[in-house]
Image (cartoon, rainbow, N blue to C red; front, side):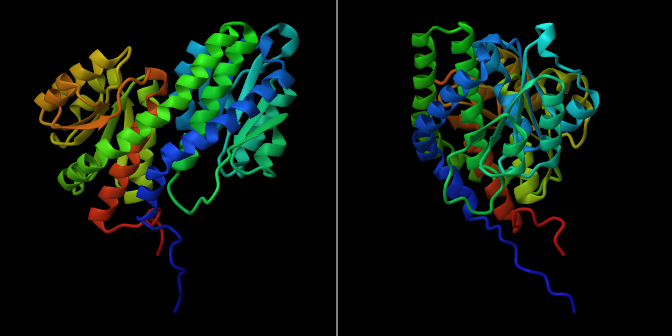
Length: 363
C-alpha cells in the first residue's frame, strides 16, 4: 500500500495572506525603496533605453501588470516576456551599440532554472541583469549582477499572494528609480510617485473590507462552472492572468485570461453561453472598452463579474456582480487592488468545491 503525505497547503492560509497585504505593503515599502535606490546608483540606470522583465507564472503576471509603470515612470520601453520566449527567441543586447538594456528576472522562490539561464544568457550578450526574489542566497540571486530580495517573513505554503504583491512593489520601485536616474522624473516627482505607491496600502485595506463578501456571493454562483474567463488590458491584463492562475492553483478550475479586444474576435463565440467572465475595469485608458465588453458579454448570456472601483454605478449595472475595490488609485497601481479580489475569489470557490490548493495532481 502506497502512503501519501498530507498536503502542506490549507484553504485557511489564502484569506490570511490576503488580509496581510496592506500591512505587508506598509512594512515592505521603505525597505524596498531604499534597496532599489542603492541598486540604481550602482548599476548605472541613467543609460537605460529598454527594460525586459521575465519570469514564469506569477512572476510573468507581475511583469505584465507593471509594464505600464515602466513607460509612465521610467520613460523606457518595457517588454514583459516569458523565460522560454526570451531564451529561444529573444534578440541579443549589446551595450556597445547604445541599446542599453536591463533584464529583470523575477522568481519569488529563487529556484526557477529558466530564470537562471535567462539571466546568464542576457549577461553574456551585454545586458545589465537584476534579480527579484524572496530568497537571498538562491540560484536566481546569484545569476544576476545585482539582486533585490523581497522582505517577507512568516511565509507558509500558499498560492502566491504575498509574494506577488512584493514582486509588484519591487518592480514599481525599479520603474520609478529608472525614471529618476534617467532624468525622466525629477527628484520631487520620483519621491511623490513613491509616496503615492506607499499610500495604496490604505486602498488595499479598504478593498479587503469591501470585496470579501462579494467574492463569497460570486463563488456561490459560479463554483460549479467547468471553466472561467478573465478579461483585461494594460495592467488589467496582468491582473486577469494572475486571477486565472489563482483559480487553477487553489480550486483546480480551468481558468484562462484574454485581452479585452481579443475576446470580441475569438472567445465571444465560445460556449457555454453562461460562462463566468470576469472583466477588470479600473479607471484608466481602457475602462470604457471594458464597460462595453461587460455589457456585450452579459447580452450574450455570460455570467459577468466586474472588478472595478467601488461606486462605479455604470460598471455595476453592466455586470451581474461588481467586485468593488478601493478608489483613488491610478491605473498603474490597480493590480495591487485586483489581487485582493483574486485571492478571495479563488479561496471561496475552492472552499465550495471542497478542494485544497495544488491538489489536482496529487493521488
